[in-house]
Amino acid sequence: MAPSAPRTRAAAALRMKQIALDNQDRTIRCLRAQLATERQGLAATKKELEDTQVALEASHKVIAGLTEIGLSMSKKIEKMKVKKQLARSNHVECHQKFQARIHEAEDSMQAQHLLIETLVDEKDSLLQTIHGLQEANNAPAPFDGDWEEEPEEEPEEEDIEDIPLGEGEIDDE
Image (tube, rainbow, N blue to C red; front, top):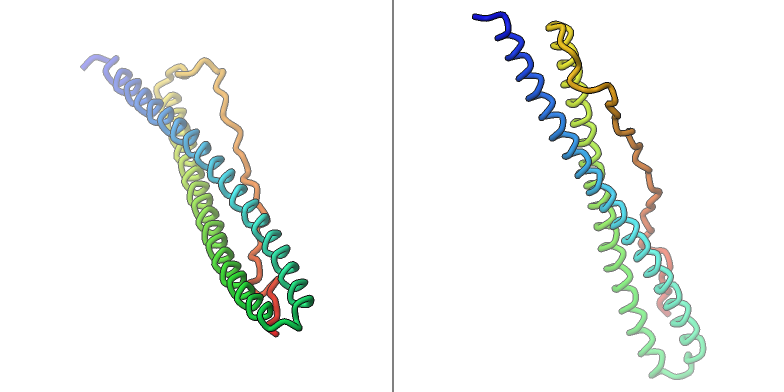
């Protein structure tokens, strides 16, 4: 066999690894975009939860005020008890739904982060293999030296606290 055959195979192998790296880069960019979308969705969900909490607190204040004014009228007292129970059940239901959505988004972000880390590690391994093959074959680098690696972004840990279920409740009278 001619001496150029191993170089041709090595060049083909290098090219295949470069294609794999390019595909991984595209996948990483796509996953980063998905991660950003998930973060935006999580922020929107958190904002909705805060808005709902403020609205529920305002609702609780109104109910308490009306109860104080209408204590002498039994009809109003009964109506207020019904409203209070409805507000409490809505509060619990909203709380549970928003907590579930927040946890789901956090789990999704963690899974995507782990996938990105795995792809970056695999990319680094392939680059080392390519450099090793180049050195072994005394081949020139397939890049022009202007290779720029994307800066690795540290995910921002958002402080999302569980809202205690008993907070903001109205006492039964």
